[in-house]
Figure 1 (cartoon, rainbow, N blue to C red):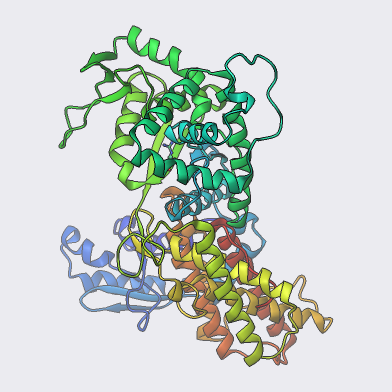
Figure 2: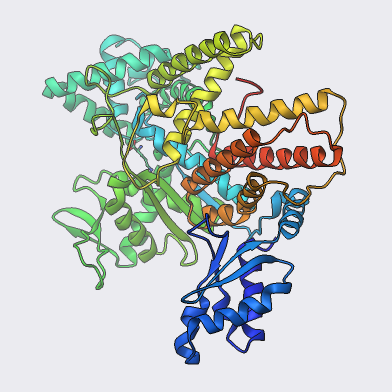
Length: 593
Ligand code: ARG
């Protein structure tokens, strides 16, 4: 569907043209004085110079021409030369009805692309912390937004499974259970299927080992040696890596599922290893990689740089691969297996320089074809109320699980409290717990996504969990309210099928329709700019518009059947738009709360 603003601009442009002026002057914006009018056009001001005429004279002529318009009404020429006007109610209703019946409510889709999105980035054997939360929330939403726009999108968790943490775990395990077959050099048989540890052991082993390595130089040496041996194919350690991965990924999947986040691919840094030797060889053969201070590097600076971009390091002087090497080799298999049109990285914005280097290196060395777009979607830090990075009460790193269970509990208490004060809905404890989880998730995700991703923000649990204001729970509350009215209506055996939405009966109803009409424009700009926050601010406005309509309108007691049906249809559309939006944001609404 054509966007409403462009239809109106065309209508006004036609009038300018009919009066002998260029049609481009007819560009319309939503009024910044909603108390005066819904839309405005300042074209007469711009045309004054060109046509050597006072702006109000142009505006008067155009306003006169528009008196018979079927799209706009109440057209007023206001000195010194503004055009103020409203949308015709009938026209708006027909637009809304068309939106109701159109596929995806009238969104225009561009040619579908294949997109790989690298997000989540959890590190194996280390618990998820709040830093991983943003990548998961933003990445999942961007994935869903791009999918809604018709693209084929593949999410890859890109596990951090290749670093020193692996060597640390192996070293600690060897200390505790030296007799395990994995440590027997002579052993040539098959290794056991069952892992020699559980997830809770693993979660304890890693921090212990990490602490020891900081205090004990020899221990650290051993861990580095183990990492080296693992990376150079030592069988027993490779088998242990598989166990660590299995146990850890099972746990990660559970954690991500609680966040309503899922990945198509669970590839890790280790999956890139097989591609490293050929990739490095080619970089050397093509003359891109050279030795500098013992390390193998590729220059990535460009003449137009305003700050220094250091070379991209490919191998350390001891020949070991780095984070860079893995990211580049990951691009090798992503291109080979998927040949995507775009790869998006949802990573902490502090890694921006690093990704600039990696992207340039990938282009220069031909790992990525020129048409494939590489996008870095860097996000800011989630801070506590004190404006400092989010910590536990005793100053430690906050584990994601603890953060979430804390909010779930708070939400449950709120919902049970609501139960006491409001009408008793007879909600069971089980339902209350599930609802609490849904509302908590909406609180966390909306709280995060309503900020522009690149900005730091304050994680304010009290504000995020409030049922009022610009919050996830407020949006859910609005949806639940609509569901409840629709249930009551249908519960009376009434049926609105085939009914149409009539011209607005009140200002609040028209305002709701005007908000609804923006849906396609908002969604399209959210796709184009990969900007979930635009959807958040839209649904807040939409929820407000709905609630004003609801408070000012007797829906269930409306006696005129046609009018009531029209209201019900409008409610259905509002619900559908809100649900579509929260779905792409990555959360959903309960039946009641
Ligand atoms: N595992 C990394 C971390 O925890 C994030 C990975 C980001 N993605 C990437 N392709 N480098 O910081």
